[in-house]
Length: 122
Image (cartoon, rainbow, N blue to C red; front, top):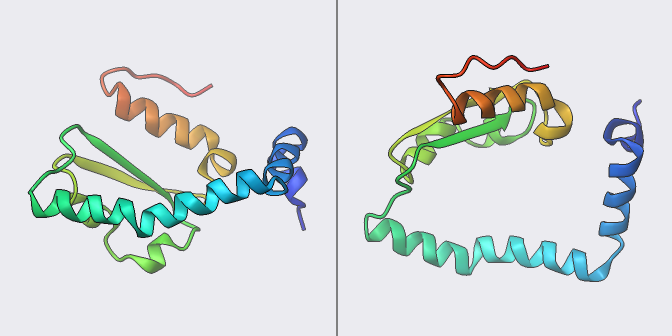
């Protein structure tokens, strides 16, 4: 079995370990989750009630091996309730896209941000 330190890389793993052992960092992480269930939700509900949507193109990416596809049948459909121009797809990875599939993530971002350029991922 691959250890987290091997999968993430030693430097990233040490940063992660420092963060999760810092009470202020952990508190900030929990406050972010709390906001999503509280004040952020209130603001989101008000925006939807007023008919406000994200007006710029929106790229939605998720990991095919994460639990999101199991939790939601139509991920893009959910985002279409919030934005007019939605595109996206699953990447062959888990929750941490930038760690699990960095080249695929970079290619998807490049294609979205500059669709006319045919940039190859190194």
